[in-house]
Image (cartoon, rainbow, N blue to C red; front, side):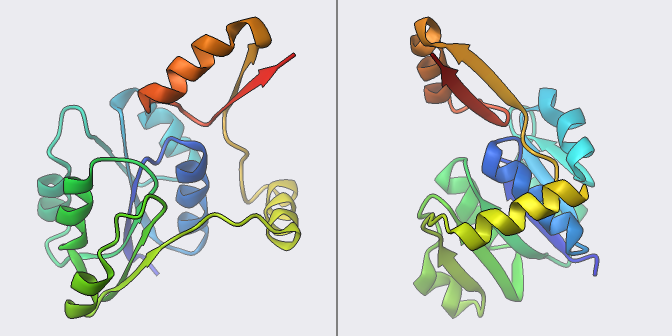
Length: 171
């Protein structure tokens, strides 16, 4: 319906799925990631991309969407940015954090629904996602493989917090 949804960590594996699912639901999607991932995110369906390394994320969203945003999905990123963006969510909107960053009490005072998501994989959920991939309505994340002797490099990359898609170490 064109509601604005901001996704922090949009280029990661979970964030990439969030971009696509929000777009599929009719949202105007704003992906937040490093600038080098802009093309990747647009390919997943992001309408706007904010480079958090060169732009003030909260101010950029505030200026582009003065009426506020409908939702915030937090898969990665700085806690202060989460707090700032949560303040832009309109009454009745939603904040979902995969990192425990949703201050439920404060959000409730603002009449915003907040949830700290705990990952729980179910067969039903995986089958639904697989069906969406098969139907072409959902793209799998970019996957970079490392050999077992490169496991330290893979760990270093993951630790940096700058992974696009998913990393897999294979024997």
